[in-house]
Length: 92
Image 1 (cartoon, rainbow, N blue to C red):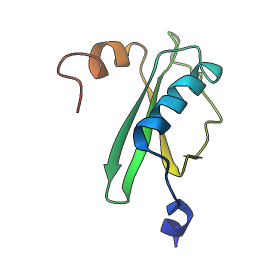
Image 2: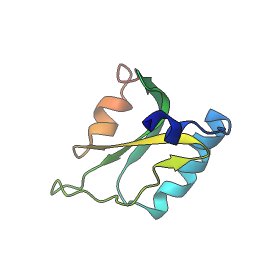
Image 3: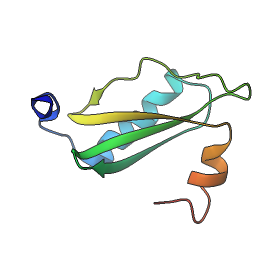
């Protein structure tokens, strides 16, 4: 039954990512990254946000759906995006 909630018409993946990249500065002051991903439930857009230097979560109340895409929010340790996701070998 849960798949009915997520099954919607989707805007173009790159357009959704660009829209989210433009929206996220309003939600967080820390580094963030938006990537398309997928699992056994299908495709989704993953938003990675870093915790601050004190490991406090700084980004709350993100939408669960944007442009028909399921949104997965992942908190990462401080500077994880810089040293892991944005490193040469970090892209999955």
